[in-house]
Length: 90
Image 1: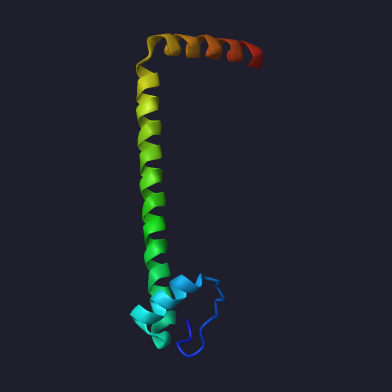
Image 2: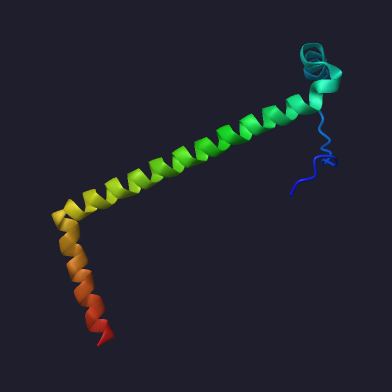
């Protein structure tokens, strides 16, 4: 369980331009909360991107497998390799 009183400290370096903009828009006492929310938002976005890329990869693999399964020449070649391998096992 996370302690609400003691939180880890993260030290980052940002440009003066960004710092002044955050301070102006958010206020100096609200910067930590703002940064935490921004990081959470980015992490969620990153996780969604990875999930989307993984699904796209899986769909591509399935499509490639189906295409290969329909390929008569490839099936014939697979049969030849199966015979060669079986002969080597005996």
